[in-house]
Length: 163
Image (cartoon, rainbow, N blue to C red; front, side, top):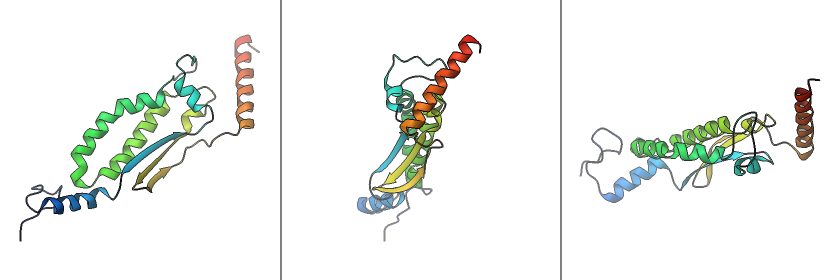
């Protein structure tokens, strides 16, 4: 019988066939592709994200989710590579989703005050949801959004003209 140490244990993978080691790795990672999805659930989120010409006088700016992803993806890949054999891959994908959502939220335009609270995170392994965090701010209906826009404009006029 060959000596086989579970990946991630002291001593690494000293022995066992390639197939045995891959089965063990599969047990640690799970079956299927791991996917992390970050949603910004407001009707105007895409417009705010993708238009570099919009001004954001209250803070934030365009490409908030893209910038967060580009800033954090290398760190994530490095963490996964370091922790893969310890069985932490799923946890790392959850952490990555939350980190990107938090950073994107911090950089999102303030505008009506609810976009930053509209980030949700889902992580799936092989199509099965292993983690879900809903957004703190639910998606506004068209009527609610229109009311907020009108109120926002009225408040801006009051500030501007001191009323």
